Image 1 (spheres, rainbow, N blue to C red):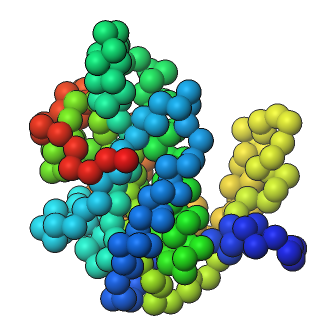
Image 2 (cartoon, rainbow, N blue to C red):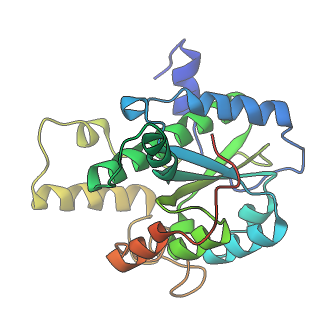
Length: 249
């Protein structure tokens, strides 16, 4: 469907880009991207997120390995790690004589805040002619990534984003049909089977051996089976390993 709205057209053209040129992004563009991220919606204006720009080649190499051997993590000129950050909020509360007790609600708030800021940054980057790809694989080794980046307590990496000028334009991957995504009620188990069967026929991404099922390295790849983060792993991550954030909004 054609539209004269430039913003909607850009959103509809979104593709995940994994092959980039060596052209520098530049400080001015990066600042515009981060400023755009800061204008994302945030619960009660807590702004419970931080972003770390990872420039160190050794850290990039290690994160790429933990994320399943994704080379673009090393190669992209810009690599941003978006973190849920309750440490800064807690410190602000204590500065004003209050006390802060992290809860599940605060955990969800900070995670959503980080995701909203990251998406604003992604849209801003694409509007500047850059390509982006999210790196959810950093959660494969969540506590290790937190330690590597020396995040303080109550901070954890939600996702990362590699960005640069695209070398190629990938083909689109069909999304669920609108009526399957936006509905007044959830489908029955039988209905869900029909939906997934349709997606398998259209993209092949959900069948055994398809993109979402295969792994470049058995047991280590980004597309391996999704596993819930164990409470003990999350507790270790939130306990913090370092003395402070390297970069935050």
